[in-house]
Amino acid sequence: MQAMSAGSLVAVSSLREFFRDAFHTASENQRVGIDEQAEAYVVNLLTMFSRADALYEKTPDGLRIRPLAHMLADALEAPSAAARQRALQRLGDVSLFIAGFFARSFARRLVDIDYHIAMGGNAYSALADTMQRSMSGRCVAAIYAQLADKFQRLVDALNEVSEMSHRHSDADILRLYEIWLKTGSRRAHGLLRQLGVRPVKGDASRQH
Image 1 (cartoon, rainbow, N blue to C red):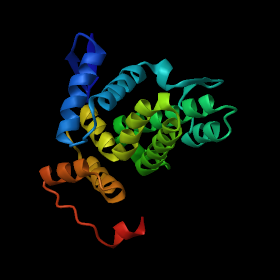
Image 2: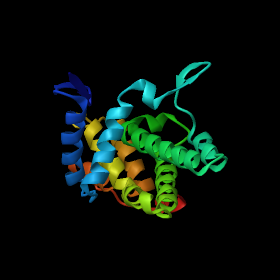
Image 3: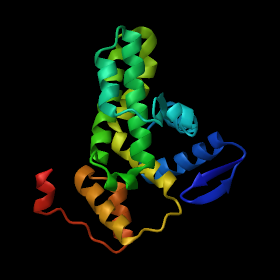
């Protein structure tokens, strides 16, 4: 099997193996600081969403990713606690995957990466709070609490997985600077320094 990594093909025995090794390396580089259970959760998420039918949902116009606001509404209007938990998990998972693997595409959208980070982090945090209320859910709650607390660093790690071999253009440099201004991403800051750019927050950063 071959896995796509930043425009190049990497031969691996399975997608899970590729994501496990790549994410472990990236999470160490970005100093994410999550335990093995949370790391396994992210690897499973990446493996699952490598299938279009898991990430996208069927609509009359074909496969689409539903807007995050609609996913949030599903959680708020859920008829049961179990349905609310599923909706919050879906919101957190999709937000993390999209922010991590499609960061460059946000330059062409009205909704930016910081929106996905906020929505995903809040979803995981709410899910952790909900799961914490039951004895059986406390172990799982600890995973979601880590994902909520480390959401920005997780996005940075997934950015690294998806861009391992990416060569940055001038537009990419501007986008990295914008991401750093909006989110404080340590990875974006480090990449800018490597590319010869010394990022400084001026008056523009106080407008966000």
